[in-house]
Image (cartoon, rainbow, N blue to C red; front, top):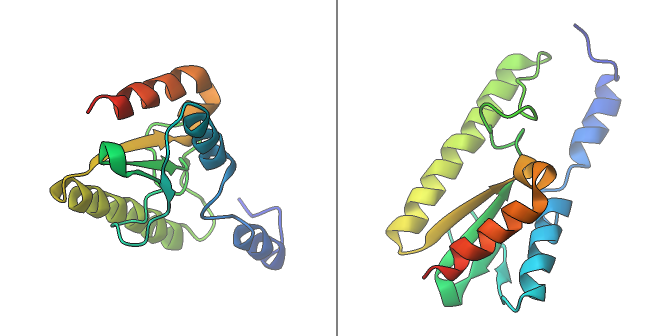
Length: 138
């Protein structure tokens, strides 16, 4: 199967994908802020630059895109057929790096919460309620 876009068009599309301040991140941040939670964004002092850092709760939150972070079993994660070896290395590398970051943060005493893009799409209210409950359990 060939890509329906030219290599130049595909490159432009991929380059336009943001790595921070995505819609799922903004949704979660606005919800937390509306409930009185105060946080830092993408703290470079912490492993993996977590999307949300809640120092008061010693908790970090990663809002992961299912494709980019290899959410196995999710309908939004499918191995690309074009340039397959490149994508296997790229996405597997992302997932391995994520695991190393989670371990480093836990060893430093942080609680790590991961919210998947699909969870927000499929059951937003339940996912946000679970997140707030998990953060509040200190």
